[in-house]
Length: 149
Image: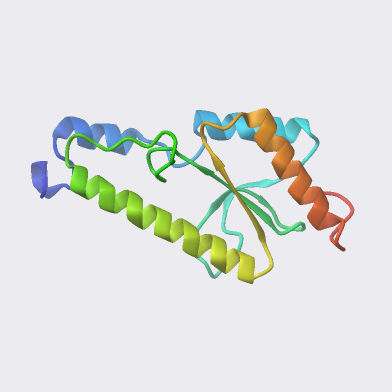
């Protein structure tokens, strides 16, 4: 099914809403970054952990080989908060299924390359999530990585 001008969107309003969605610097992402930064950790934002893999992580700790993905409840099918779209539901169900499949593939590929992958839901408390990130980074650095994150 296609909407206006051959678009996948069901209406002009839906298309405008979807185009306005940010892929980075969302409120949950900024909150997590602030909390991680407050713990003294430094990171790279929205980069590919593996240059050969066309997928970006929200926070990357290259020396520690830790990649953090902040997954949106709608886009990644959160078991607690995901809701089915009322309009164009088949399209969205398939979109979320493909997103989850890609997430699993990304996590597997990074793990095979020696990375620790953390997936955090957007609804999680940023302070608690930051502590998980810090724990993972420090554990990785303690296994022979660099002295500073």
